[in-house]
Image (cartoon, rainbow over all chains, first blue to last red; front, side):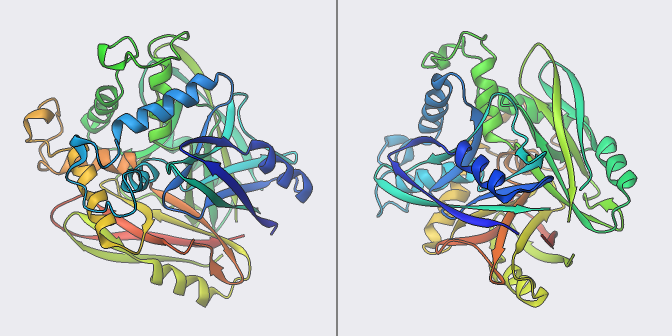
Length: 140
Length: 140
Length: 140
C-alpha cells in the first residue's frame, strides 16, 4: 500500500492548501480505484476540506474559529487551566477537536474524487512557525 | 472496489437520511468484511451519523447549528466578508467545517456496523434546493 | 480483514483513553502496512485524538464543550425539545455531532502512526455509566 509523509511548513494560524501534493501522490501511485486517507500527526492543527475559490471563505472560516475559541488570555477564557504553552495553545487543541484529524477520499480513474470546489487544507491553529506531518495512505 | 455516486435532492436546511441507500449498496456488493467510506463532494453540506429514533433530535441539532452560526445578515455576524452568495452561504461553509465530510463505517457479515440508534444523514446547510453527490466506496 | 469490537465502560462525561487497546489489536493482527479505522456505535459519545501529556488539556477540552453546549435545563438552552431522556441527552447528541464518529489512522511497520503527543480517546457525553462499543477494523 503506497504511503508517504508530507511535511508542511506553517507560519501562523490559517489554512494551507495541499490538494496538489495529494493529487500527485495518487497519480504517481498508479492506482485505478481506491481510498486515500489523509491523517495529521498533531493535536494543535487539523484537516479541512473547504472551498478553493474565494479566499474570503478561508479567512471567514479562520475568523469564526478565533471568535468561537478566543486565546486563553481573553477575559471570556479565564477558566482555561492549560496556559503554560501560550495563549494560543489550548484554543488550538479545542479547534483541532472541532474539526478533523483524518479524512478519507475515494479515488476513481486514478484521481481523488474531490468536488469542483473542494480543496484539501491543513488548518494551523498555532501562532509560531511549525513543520506539520501529514500521512498520505492509499489503500483499497 | 465497488464504488457509486448517490445523488440526493435537498429542499432547504436540515438532515436527510440515506441509511437504506448505503445499506443496499453494501448488500448488492456482496462483501463479507470491509470498510464503507462515505464522502460528500461539497463544501456547504456535510455528513452526520445521528439518532434515527426521535425526530426532535434532528430538529434540535439543526437548531443548535443555526444558533451557533446565524445567517450572515444577523447583527452578530457582521464580520463576515463572503456574503455575495447569500446570507446562508458562509454559515454553510462553517457548519460543514464543524461536522464531517467523510465517514468510514466497518462492514461485517455483509452489513454496515451501525449501532441500533444510528442513522446516516446528509446535513444540508443551504436554503435553496440542491442535488448533492455522495460517493460510496466499499474497500477492504 | 481483522476486526474486533472493544467495549469501554464509562462513568460520566470525559475522555477515556484506549490507545493501548488499539495498538495491541494492530500488533496482534501482524499487518505490515494498512489502515486502522475506529468507529463508535453510539450517538451520545464520540471519538477524539488529543494530547496525551498534560491531563489539563483533556479537562479544558471537556469544559469547553460543556460551556458551548450546556445541559438542556440551563436557561440558555430552553429551546431544546428533546429533553425526556434527561438534561445531558440532547447536549450529548450535539457534542457528538461536533466531534467525530470514525477516525482512520494509517499503519506502518506494524504500528499505528500516531504522533508523539497523540492519544486515542472515547469522549463520553452522558452522565450515567455506559458500556460503549467501538469497532476496530484493520484493512489495506
